[in-house]
Length: 515
Ligand code: HEM
Image 1 (cartoon, protein in one colour):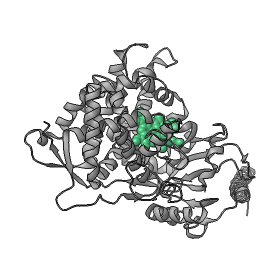
Image 2: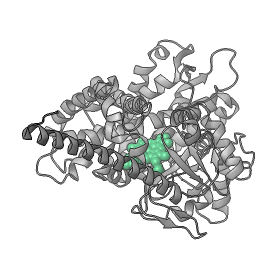
Image 3: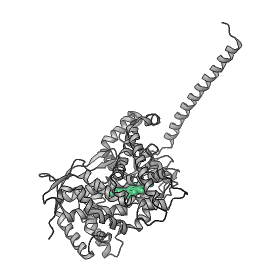
Image 4: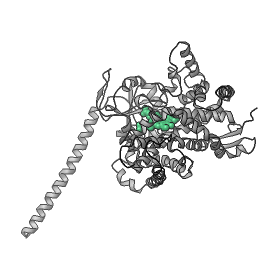
């Protein structure tokens, strides 16, 4: 065969490119294999619960937890509650540590154990803007400081609106003295959404139906993007992302929220006297001009963190109030007495309702929102006092649901004891000790409803006040019941690590005749 010099050069060039590509691909594969072997070598040696993704494939192991998370975590707790186990959850592989480590873990700084990276990684936050929490801590700071400092005024302004919110959400009850049935999950979510919007964005936006709808849709689509993408291996997610429906819907919600918020922000200054999270975020803003998309993202993140969780707690407690209806009378007596003594509704009146506080805390104990808690990413390798080394990159969690039901930790285990916390509180008072550990706002290694340690929920003081206020309001103004013939609360749903009260349960409300 005859080659010209130019042909020969082109041929050599192609051969070199092909060799370079082949070497790169081989290099990448070798690096990948070595990194897997290295990670496997560094991993904590611990038994596994559930399907091993290396044996059954990642998709099947994930699907197994998605469906059977409740049983897998029960097995894990029963066998390894004093040590640890690995489990593949719907999102990632986790090392579930015994709760006995919590007090040591909570003392480690964020440079060792990071809660925010864990939130972002679990929710695929770089696709749905949850990663805003890595760019600033202002949303947490304002919940921890200004929101707590102004809680009496925040609650006062919520009380001001509650009458009209209930008239709007339970209209049939205000027309006669009969029971009227409403879907519990939907109705309470709408009540909480309206009531939470005020401390979030203030007047007049808190009354704007477009804002209220946008805020709820953002929560739905943020979760939906995560679920839609979790079906694909991580390498494919960036390719699939542009085509998923929930991405478009979330973008639309952000656009609407930005338009609405930019109007409000333009009408405000730093240091204005508004009592809401948006104002406090603006006050702490560093730049000369407000970055509206950034502020909108932060505000919507707090909406995501606050609304559904508060509504879920109220729904769970309502189910328990109807299930154990024999306690309603005692609670109504307490509410009546305190409202009379305090001269009406206020934060301090709500805080004096000790029986209600105890009832709510017991409902929270038995109705955690997640199977696992204290989710943290290990950023720097750390060795604990018993010699356990947690290598960087490990994703750790602790048991929440089963620990809170353990009869070895709580007398009666899964039995509902409404005055459990009241009795502990009174005993502490008699002994001259602090009552704080027994309040509905408190956290402990055995009761992780609000998480634990430095990064436990910073909004829990507002959440607990709002939950108490709305429940006291319902008990004071309405008789409540399940539909005729139903005698027990509905079973909760278990989806992946989430625990959700029934979405279809209806509750009857009847306006009470007060003498
Ligand atoms: C019943 C209602 C609520 C529950 C059960 C709840 C629960 C939690 C939990 C478990 C965490 C993670 C804690 C940890 O990792 O240790 C958390 C974080 C957080 N919560 Fe709540 N929460 C509720 C209501 C609220 C409310 C009303 C607000 C705001 C006003 C709020 C704002 C936040 C924020 C900002 C974070 C931190 C997110 C971050 O790490 O950046 N939460 N919450």
